[in-house]
Image 1 (spheres, rainbow, N blue to C red):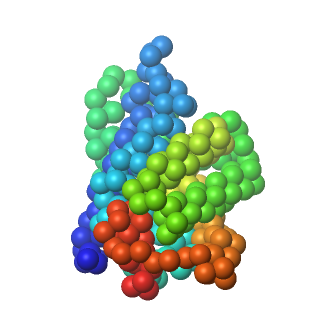
Image 2: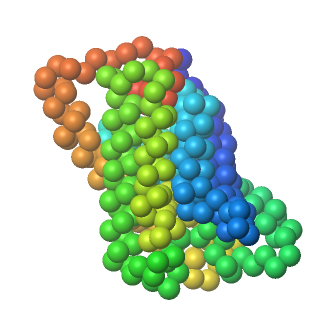
Length: 260
């Protein structure tokens, strides 16, 4: 059964809220906590596990993009209708803003809290955790998002056993963050970048353009790469077989692909 657009964008709103609240919340509230902080590894796991859990929760409803770069990438890969990209992106950004708002309210309850310490915002040059410049940050975000979308398309393809897709997708995000968190604080998701940047203001808003442009370019490249390299080869060999709906994250992806 094909879900209505209102149900799908509602699911995207909730899913993006969960991703940003838990992922960025782990960085703001728990990563540097005195001697007991979870550190970079904990933040990476928090993001990966939030994506994995939400993929199981809303995958059948919306496909669980919860990321504008993924929506653009799946559109480029022929898995998602272009007419639905804008509503999905709007819902994702609103969910991220609400999550950042709630996180700000909680974090500001601690003595000595200052949003200018970063608030999990993404940045380059002086605002990169490792001091990486604009070029390094751009290349990292494009490459990581491209490979992320490539993994998503592979994990939701017809030959992958139903119900397993969220696991490699969540693990992929975890690995991406482990590699790139010191470069840009890891975006690969324009909505995730927008929520915190609105509260940090100043430099975070000035640099936000990169964390929209680079992930979307990477997502589109990932979708095109998978479509040309893998899907094209499978279609040539006759290996692809459409399955019936009602197969979780995979079925939602297939539904929107057929609807497009």
